[in-house]
Amino acid sequence: MPGLDQYIPERAWFDRQAQRAYAGTHGIGHITRVLVWSEQIAERFKAPLRREELLWAAGLHDIKRWDDGIDRDHGARAAAWVRQSFASVRPEVRDARSRPRRRPLP
Image 1 (cartoon, rainbow, N blue to C red):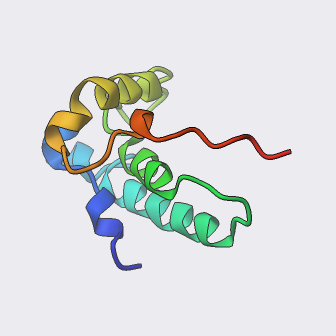
Image 2: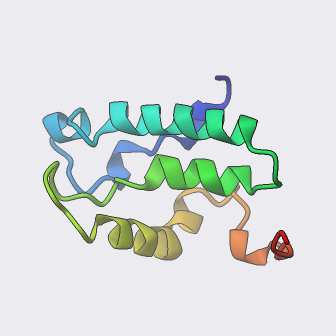
Image 3: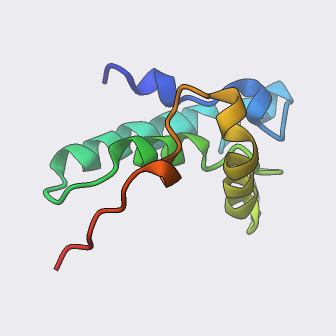
């Protein structure tokens, strides 16, 4: 799928910097698979959706994981990082909060 590589997080964004962690169960391979499946779902989805936000969420969802075991707060830490730091590391990505809200589907 062309273009998905832009959603791969940079290694420096991960809390776990060890090579084995980056390549571990929730490392770059897992993130790549989640991106591919997210794109496949988006292609088949009939209702309008915010594809860029979906793909960034897929790419960034595990970057603040502390280990490959149970880490219940990793999603909240990743979301906090996105709110605090993402605009400074990817300023070219338009802030989703500045986009007009779509009306919910009936």
